[in-house]
Image (cartoon, rainbow, N blue to C red; front, side, top):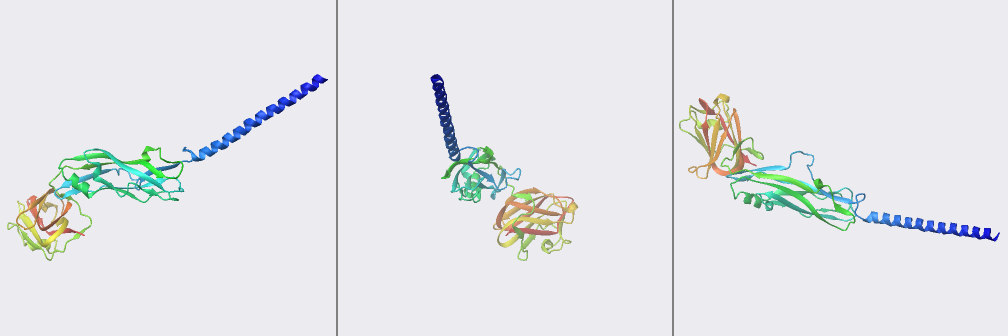
Length: 329
């Protein structure tokens, strides 16, 4: 009997011991779980981190990362501009400042570019910064104009660091969202400042004050090219001719447009010149042309008082019915 009582007490003590051990493990597990949850809320992990990245405003547009500049006697023509923002996927409690850097390879220096800010800020409660603009600076254009050679380079705008008091805020792990690539080519210097097309931000100049002269061999009154009548002209058989215009004062011009009787009477190549005094002429280049209305724009606008138009290549009979000049607005 005494033995049975003793065994019963032993069994009870063992049960109590097992229960105590189980409770200890359970409490330890709960404590560990609470500690783990607390750590998850403050540690940098993929589940609750705030990711910071950069994105172009026109990211949906294809083939928008290649820029070309032309180099003519008027200087460097063309534009480089990329507009983008610093972004996060959810509002943050405090400001986030991104640190940007431009890097590149090739013969065009990184110093040719400028950012309106290299420390963009996402304000507390917002999800994006104000516009960030990369552009080719005026000093950059001047630097590129120092050589007549073909120049090219590959570049990246990179998000390299952050400044913020927000916890668990990191730069995106997606490399496509931390850099913006682009390329730039400056064409080899060309004396030609002419191309086919209608210039932008320009208007047709008033012609009443012009003093117009023409090659003495040309047939017809030179005033026919500025009388507004498409059925009057000056013309020549089997040779080209020239027209000069004195604007009376210096004008900043961006192109010309000439009218002709029809395709059979149109010049096929012309050359333009400018002059400050009407005696010494500087060529703007030659251009192959066609059609009864010939719009020619200047790669770089020019400021001049005198303009000379020379027909270089021509059909059996060539004419001009109207001559107009585009002035920069």
